Image (cartoon, rainbow, N blue to C red; front, top):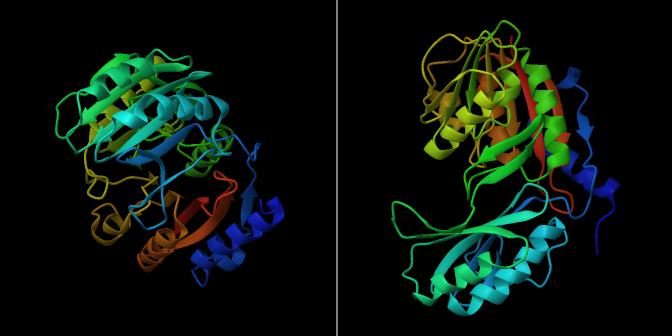
Length: 335
């Protein structure tokens, strides 16, 4: 049974309101809500796990892998690729690992397998067979600490960015819902007010927000820890005739300097270290914070308001319909 969209909305907005409860400025803010244009079949990537010959999803807060016959939130090419992966790979897998399926272009899928466990040589033949199946653009297999994966076909991933295609490395992070992401990028750029400003972007990835921020900023420093994502971000900027200083580094300890605006999109763990020990704060007049976890968002907002900021914008984006997850966007202004 699927919960009504109105119920899902109220539950998720309740999480967001609780994260902001009692913070400076929250009483003057109307919480905004952005719907997903599609409620099913919206997700452009899937991260599966395997244990021996079982392929499926990990249970919540567990390493146990549960086989799943169908996932209704995946886009149709991913659902077909899931079936192909099950048929080609299940009998050849050993130990534990993960399989990421990523949509590239309109209807092709790149499969990336990662495992720390030694694999039987038959898996290589299985990967080759998977690459030959309809709708599979390429397969990459990473075992242990190997410097490079074994590759079949093309593993180049093209994402649907807000202003066109973005190149990304196989197995890398990307937003899951194209329709919601386009609106999110637009709102981030609007709230950042980058025209003529010195901007610092943290957890930049392949440039999902970078390409929008670079269009008006006086200077832009973008920090990302994955060297492959940094290279892709630089190419995505160049493709658009844009420039920024994109560096490999720890976003929790960014380059020191005086910035007008900070934009950050951290992973689920949030950005506690940045708010507690960054040499950047409290100089920026605006902080635009994208969050995928309201619990860590609540913690970080309290740290930010303790440092002299107040809320002046709060919004929920229904990036993940049919789940309890919520993408949030908050702007903090210096008091």
